[in-house]
Length: 203
Image (tube, rainbow, N blue to C red; front, side, top):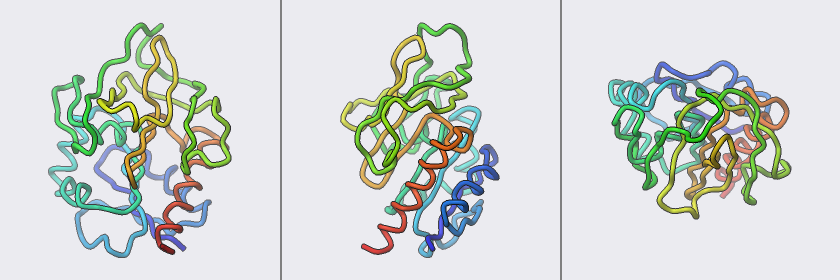
């Protein structure tokens, strides 16, 4: 059974995420301090609110550097994905800097925040195994990342303009939608992440 750490930085839907991971067979620990992560198979970085507030909490809890140093499977959700990037125009904050690019306000939208279901066009990736491209997922946000390297984008959706819905860079994968609120397809995403962690354990 894979041990997965869910990062508690004060802003994330931890209960639903942990329940989804446990349903997929993971042993889940909520982590709010750096500590020793060597026993974990994977890490989940959730988030709601703004990137600036999330980074402030990560920095205050001394979690930013351990996340940068973590080399195993990492799943970023919503603001957790946005933190993968250099900075955000939402509040001028910096991110973790895993990927080059900025988080930008959605444009040409009917209204903000964007709340609801959108079909996500996906590229082949283990996080979407068994999930057809075009499957709807649930979004709650007003900003999304714009990657400098289009090659890291593995999911897109359109709300007004087309924007990034998922990225992959090595062991790091992030989704702008909320899998814990996306029904069966969302649970499949969490289950696929557990499978990825199990495969990393076996490697």
